[in-house]
Amino acid sequence: MKFSLAWLKDKRVLFIMLLAAAMLLFLYFKGAHFGLEFTGGTRIPITLEKPVSKTTMDEMVNTIKLRISKFGLSQVSVRAVGDQQIYVELPESSDQAYIQQVKEILGAEGKFEAIIDGNVALTGEYIVSGSIRDMASTSGSNVRWGVGFVVTQEGGKRFANAAYGKANYPVYLFLDKAEDSVVVFRESYLENITATHSDVLSKMKTILSYGGNELVIIEPGESDQDVFSRIMQLNKTKVVIAETETGIINLLKQEKQNRNSSIKVISKPMSEMVPEVLDMGLEGITINQWSAIGLLSAPTLSPALATGQASQQFSIEGNAKGDTYQEKQTYAVNEMKRIRSILSGGALPVGIELGSSITVPPSLGKEFLNYSIYGMIIAGVVVLLFVALRYRHPEHIIPLVFVASTQMIILISFMATFGTLDLSTIAGLFGTLGTSVDYQIVITDEIIGRQAGGRDEAKRRLEKAKYIITRDVGVLTLILLPLMFSNIVEIIGFATATLLGSLLGLMITTLVYNAVIEKSYEE
Image (cartoon, rainbow, N blue to C red; front, side, top):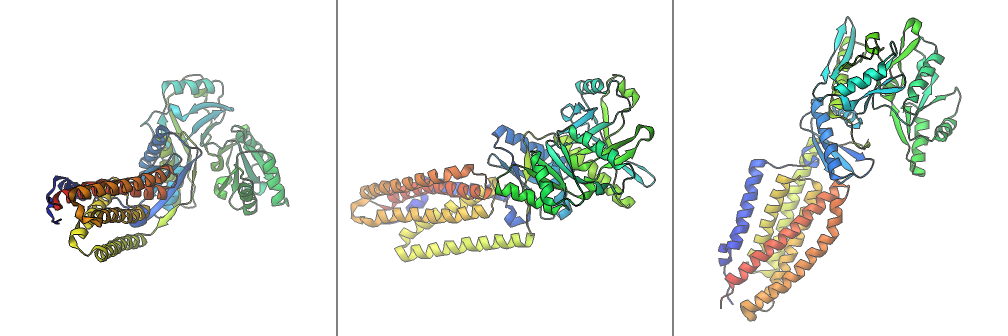
């Protein structure tokens, strides 16, 4: 038997070389996509309240993308993970204020409602796409924000029917109105409001009733445990509470954890818990804004709109908050961007919950990338040394190194170009390198096990080795395939890289060693 390197000119080997070169060209022209761990930035996980179909998931992703684009954000990645999770990734330059703005946009359900006298007069589904615009105004030191839009003819008629005969009634404009919730409140929150507190609390209860909500007023001296018991007796799904009520919040969280309760705790800053109350003179008071429950504003219905005449032009307006003129201007701009982006994106088809954001500094991401590169190089050198010590003859080593090298070039180029290179993918690449070399060792041992048998014996032993490798790949596929449908992106990345690497290794190994046997063994 005689060995040679003529197999390198075989068309099957040339095909593999061409494939590797093509993947490198793809990588060069399209560029590599690195994960958050390497580039730095912030990841915000979104968990859907239930698993959804691919169609619904695509709708969710597109809605979130539209919201983000309308808000004026760029370089934000939105991708689905499994059937119940979405990842939103922000660039490395994001500061905490920027991240908080994005969270507010993402956390909104996008459900707009106009309510007159307890009846829904208009919803977001009637808003004409592309008609939403800003309507800011200033008068002296007073700054108002505003968002105008056009509704369809059907929407205009629906509003006209609900508004008929309701002149001077408040029109409550909600965005993500609180529903089936308990709102925990203290009368002391109203200390800066001059109106009679009992009248304000009565109005608050009326507005809360539109969403099937209840108001729990903490009595002076009442313990956190007693308040907690009253909340639980109401059997609601959500609790809206001031973030300063830490004792009650902790009891609610313990209940959720210990008894696997489905109750959702929504803590709000005090500025959102306190409603904006307007004195309407002889008509009494009205609650014009209450951010904690999603009330944007409550303009009075003009007599002209209460005649039954349909109108298609509407707006949402409110006073900007802030101690200085500049703060009010900033608030107005941000509020208009927030409402405009949410209305433009529309309502989400499924409820969501935001997870804790993860931030990786750019410098740390660069270190992760460097360490991964060093690790791959070291792993390659160790494998090369092991193979060289085991076989010693270049004729046995070169095919093995060729297969492993081309496999890694193709796989890395593919994952970086059409996917994302992150830590989980790198872990899969390490696993792939190990299994690839293992396949080659199995084949090499089989081929050189009985050298006297000639080409036919070598081919028979190659088929035996191929059977062993195919069986191993099949078992590995059965193990990894369920992980591809996991909701944990790290597991999906690892499973994808390992599975693709194993299948690619099987293909390259088979082609190369068939060429080695045909060209290296001469009759």
